[in-house]
Length: 318
Image (cartoon, rainbow, N blue to C red; front, side):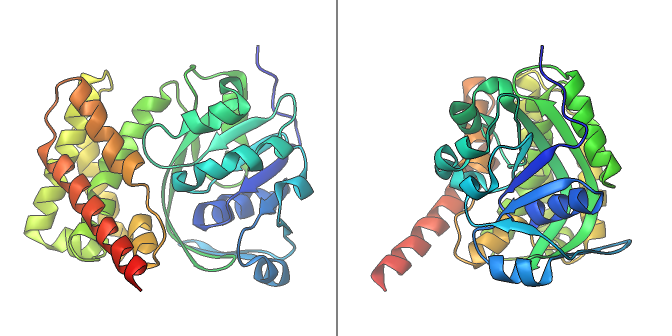
């Protein structure tokens, strides 16, 4: 039987980028005890706090508990992992100082296979995952522009919903974040790929374009639809039924984002690593295990991989 989430949990935010700042600030503004692990821009966050710009207004958390190391934060009741999956190797050092006997670890990372590295460090019984259907961009340290608040879907790693899952969802709800608890975390991850695979991928492969360009270009829009269909087919073969109407919903939501730069495109432009394997490589491999051909997805995977290799070669030559 899992332990319940304390009434006033001590929360650590590991990774203070767009998602970490957005959800952390929301939780802090609601009166929760939130502690941020900040890798860069810590001085700015401590001096000016965290500012959110949302479609319904602005939120400013003036006083932020920001730390340079996990050891300074100490044990917490809830750890929210919002670093990208490309940084998971660092979790072996970051997470242990934050852990207590009943600490919950919630990862907000994109793609498939992202809970396993966390579970390897803290134990599977402590791990939950969340899929964030949100449009957020960090424009400066501690400053986040949110164009689409969306919702968060939370699930247990390898287990159905428990009482603590619902308590965690309620914690987000009280902070003004629409949140749902679901039994099948793996299915939710495939659902998120329906958007992430085409829009993050085509934004890079088509030459650094924003979502409005993809939506307006007949060829790119058609290709996005075909990529979605491959994801839905692979998911179905793996036992995850995603209704085709879900694809239509992704296009409707994307149209509302207007000129939006997906997170992978931002990382690519700024020379940071992107979740190549988690978002594109792993879906290809899993589709192959059940005999589902995904030629467009596989092509997109290799194109992005080639672009990343070329960029790396240029950097090495300098």
